[in-house]
Length: 143
Image 1: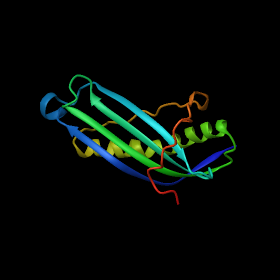
Image 2 (image 1 turned 30 degrees about the vertical axis):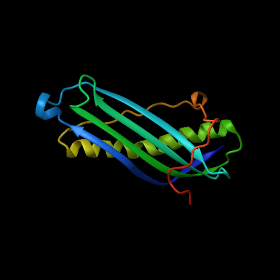
Image 3 (image 1 turned 180 degrees about the vertical axis):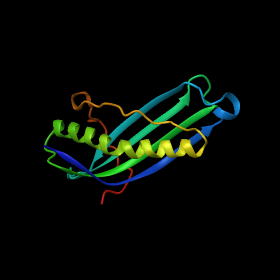
């Protein structure tokens, strides 16, 4: 069975604007979206995962907007084929997401917005689409 082990993670970029409380109180509807991709080293023993998550006020993005891009470097073992990469993909998400969730929660709490917790997506390996076309360079050095 293929396994991914998180070696390092970091927040790469944050954009944040919170004018909700000042203008309209804390009771607003927020929209959420995310993207996730994994790039492998040529030998397949390491990968870099990039998780991007954004939240915005559904009626007026100027009132609340948050986007966070987080990167994780993983050690990969047992990756022998495309199906194994799909399993690694979900493992990387499962390991990186709690760090994203924590960062977003801390940032929102520090801005006076209590109780915001991101909901984790359920990723089924059979639904993962691997990017077979173009090879993207990893955004962190793979050590």
